[in-house]
Image 1 (spheres, rainbow, N blue to C red):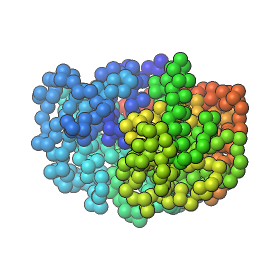
Image 2 (tube, rainbow, N blue to C red; image 1 turned 30 degrees about the vertical axis):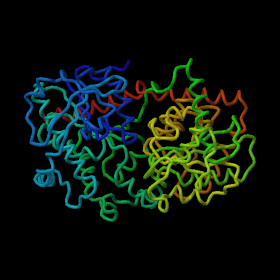
Image 3 (spheres, helix red, strand yellow; image 1 turned 30 degrees about the horizontal axis):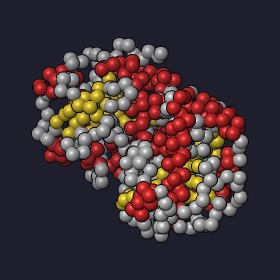
Image 4 (cartoon, rainbow, N blue to C red; image 1 turned 120 degrees about the vertical axis):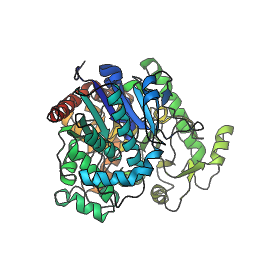
Length: 545
């Protein structure tokens, strides 16, 4: 086991996704916590937003009346700011503090002025979720400051780690008020880089010509970019999750990350060997039952099931190229039926009631849209739906759109995502913008071969670590650039055609190679990168003591 800083007295980590499952950062922190908890125990404290109510409690937070009871009784915060202390209900059960931050809005203008004067953060053009993120991270800074005093940490080794631009104000507050504390800032994806891609601009061919400040003005991202850039420059150690994002940071934020800290994972969500086959069988039965009832098609039991999933970013996540690859695949004859699932939460309205009723009765539903399990509020604007309407209904690939969160109570599958992923024969994540990419890593952990691209951090790690083909690592990394879209779609179709034609023994071998790849990406392997980051942060902070 790696020993990281036995002399570290306290490690705070702040994120909007602590006990708050929104996206990939939740996976990063919740899986990393087991390794960190094993190393530090309750010297590790996660700080997250208290955005929950009695009617809608966090399913990931277990409050405690005794943990830090004396601190809670004596801590003084502004009106409208309060804390709850408990455990994050993930492996490791780390200490977590949720902070309610409504009271910080009353002082935001004064605080923004302070941050402008001290760090040049331009909050003048703020809109959307900027104020909410800053109110939370400001309050998180108050919590860290309070605990710093309560535990008498002055002169000791303390690290405050902040994730994403949404916590930037917290880092700057700590830098201002607690200059002895070592700060680490991790950007998982730059706000301006994501915006460039989301607006259809070519990021990679023109990377060297982009100026982050200028693009922020053009794309109306000035405040978020200004805050993220200030946090990156003021931190004692600046990190990101992949080499591809490190180049992006150096160009757009004008600071090269000190360390690349790739995202690991914990395989605790994968069923034990003695249960694996039965869970996979149950998943396939559910997927096939829904597909048959929804489409009215005769689909064989040995159908080849393929899926894509992730954040609903049509271009960035490669949903466009996935659908075009399915269109290419659908023009060919195959040994097995092929069913492709697009499991991407969108502006979901409700489960298709006729489908739900048909599933209850064990019959086929008679639907006007026999290709989506749930309806959406914006059927005329949903990019996935619009592209699917152009697919050949008589093609050899059945494509099904599931625009909801698969949390086990969606009204159709009623199984969480992992309990469906295990039933797939392949997955495809052809991202255009993907700083890391947890979805393909999760896939191979289940022994499901996956296709991703060279523009993802995970894809680049695979190419550096293994031979790039299914037989060697269970992964195919398709080379993707700003100008080879059709080639990528064709390559995906060809790779899926290969997998669909594999025999049982070859499938078994590929699945084993996929699981072996996943085992090389556990947090216990990647924790060493944090050792380096913490070394740098503590060393730089020591110059201010």
